[in-house]
Length: 236
Image 1 (cartoon, rainbow, N blue to C red):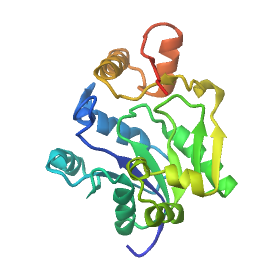
Image 2: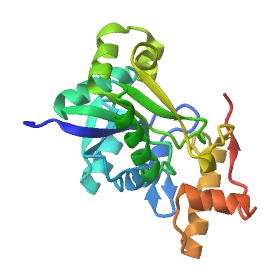
Image 3: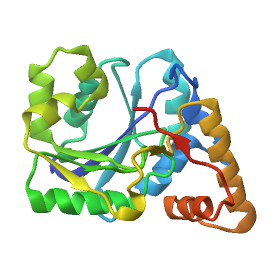
Image 4: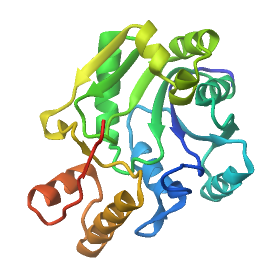
């Protein structure tokens, strides 16, 4: 690749999740959870390129097959050392900055991402994310240099699994207070358990039946009007 892209979004995905195996392939009103995440991210006005980074294990062959059918870029790397998977991906898809999204957050919102990137640019930080957000809503953005620093200097398995802890502790970090309508840190819209999935599927089907946009704003509106009871508690 001859030219560095400004923002590369890496959607982190795998099928061997312990609480709800293969959850990223589960249906949400006609499309997989992984597709739903990709849909909203792809609406961003600031992201230059999106890839899905999965593992090189046989269990994730299904992810690559699905992505090929959708013509979505797939990168495969280390299963447990996700930091290495991210770094290796940037050696192929060269970039200045990386946005990290996990594939279990179907209500991740492109407007939230773009707002985050705006603050990141203004702050000239090496790492930014929103604080006090609904769990499953806030993305992370960091520079390639920060990622390389982490890759070169940490051998801690926690850092390697979660990608960004070393960056947060050793680079210029800016935590941004999220818009007050999304300031519900005790709540979660991530799909982590079977119960989470059932609630999210009910929401997507309700939107489909009522011709509503399936996004975080609709979710909050329906919840606040007590039409759905879809918030799960986020256990810290």
